[in-house]
Amino acid sequence: MIRTIVRGLSELAVTAGAVLLLFVVHEVWVTDLWSDRAQDQVAEELREDWAAGAPDGEPDFGQAFAFVHVPRFGEDWTRAVVEGTDPDELEDGPGHYVGSALPGEQGNFAMAGHRVGRGSPFLALDVLAPGDPVVVETVDAWHVYRVTTTTVVDPSESSVVAPTPGGAANGGTTGAFLTMTTCHPKFSTRERLVVHGELETSVGKDVVPDGPAALEEV
Amino acid sequence: MYPWIWRHLPGPLAVRVTTALVLVLAVAALLLFAVFPALDGLWEPRL
Image 1: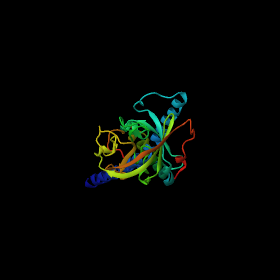
Image 2: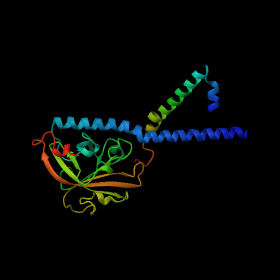
Image 3: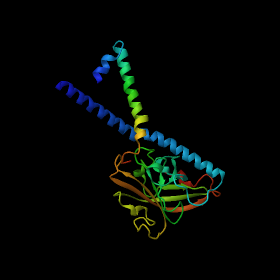
């Protein structure tokens, strides 16, 4: 009798352990499969939209509206950026903080992205060094930002996406900034890794259809 | 539970081992590709 109970409990414990391990596998790897597919789809839709004609006004919630190229992450590393930073948007790709500046504008063009799992777009955000280019492609222009600082902050530190990074949420801006945020350390949400950059140049696609030289850097 | 399943697997040892492996993989696949995705959104945090 006792033996049956102990055996039953131990089987339960082993099963629970195996299910937990599988859950980690799901979070870290399997979610990447779905998110990679979703990213491919929003990227394709955006290319099609652009081919059909320039969009006007603000991007629609949940829709891709720009591409971010980070040569440091790989020669052809690019992700479509979607509008919004809720879980559903971040599953598709890096998300643009609603209300923050649009690419090339004065203010802070701020994005969030997952570190581990769900596409892991910002897995390597910690390897970005000051001076590295981050090129944001819109329908008609290339915006070349240069990384200035990398910091680790508390998740409540929302001033990193303020119009002037570190300033007031509704304050003025002192330039055209770029901000990328992700979870830190890897496999944890304890802190946020934040990379800031500043706009170097904006150049029209009619001038350089294939992109600026910064794309070939690093 | 596991001894019970093992006792009820038919065939010689090699066949039983293979069947058991397939069963384990099937359950793992069910969890990874059906159960966990269906429950997605019920837990925090996301990394």
